Image 1 (cartoon, rainbow, N blue to C red):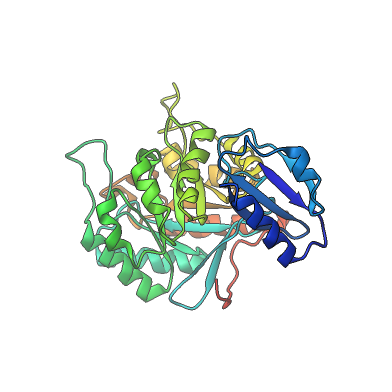
Image 2 (cartoon, one colour; image 1 turned 60 degrees about the vertical axis):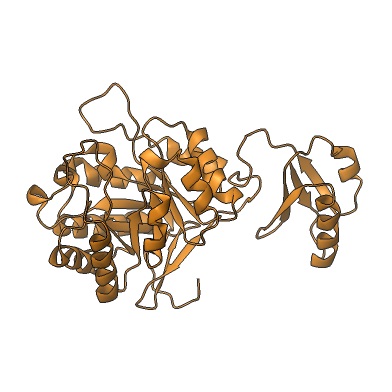
Amino acid sequence: MIIVIKRGATAESVQCFTALLEKQGIKVHLSEGASQMVLGLVGDTTGIQEKSLLAHHLVEKVIRVQEPYKRANRLFHPDDTRIAVRGLDGETRYIGAGYLGIIAGPCSVETKEQIISVAQSVKQAGAGFLRGGAFKPRTSPYSFQGLGGEGLDLLIEAKRVTGLPIVTELMAIHQLELFDTVDIIQVGARNMQNFTLLKELGSCRKPILLKRGYAATITELLMAAEYIMAGGNDRIILCERGIRTFESYTRNTLDLSAVPILKKQSHLPVIVDPSHATGLSWMVPAMAKAAIAAGADGLILEVHPNPEEALCDGEQSITPDRFAELMKTLQRYAAVEGRILYEESHETP
């Protein structure tokens, strides 16, 4: 249930009203937009009468939320959420609410030279975040599984050298203690419905990059986000990375229609992964541009200095030079749409 508060209401009066609602066993989520204040009621609201709420002098409107996701619902939070992350270089990067966040780096961390070289290249081209897999979920048990803890150490070294915030995938709860220095924790497609893991991340204060499962509906993705938000962590970035269909030419089918739907239904930022979606490096630039045109708040791209020698997913990785070319194009796209691709800031996130 959503309660829209009348304009001009004082913070003290809203606080007293909230206390009355909480006495009825309801959790109240306050969202202060640019022009209006909204109270989101979570819990069993069947016993609350809309007429009695409308009779209160603070209440302008009452809306029953039909969707099963509440905190992730745009009705609960009318304004777009903006995720802010500060790098070691003192700059704050943003994703959402008019800012385009570009996350780039290799599929897997392989060597110190590789990850630092890529980090320096993508930062110079304008990327705001460095990605790299330390723990790699692979279909085959015989494929390269990542360097594990050593890979994390190399990512942290690249972060120290470049100042870029790092994004890497968490596969299991017991690994969480190793992720203290990771800036954004990625939940991969295979773990999107690992509800035990999602609940644990609810008590984590780090931003979570939540990838859509390869057979998940949009509602299921939003419900996965709801699991994390129900635990108190609302710093979530949704990621469309392609879904499984009957088509076999590409690795997955990139569902760009998910972007405007998610933006309509939720306030959370939405980014797109054209690398995993297509599995073909020559398609990545076109799909990256299409994603931004569809309204995505950013991209996560695989960049490798020698794709043909990559230990993981080289066929879908673009080179640093190709990435730099793409960034120039995306700058023009952002300018046309009045969005900010990258901007230095020394504000506190």
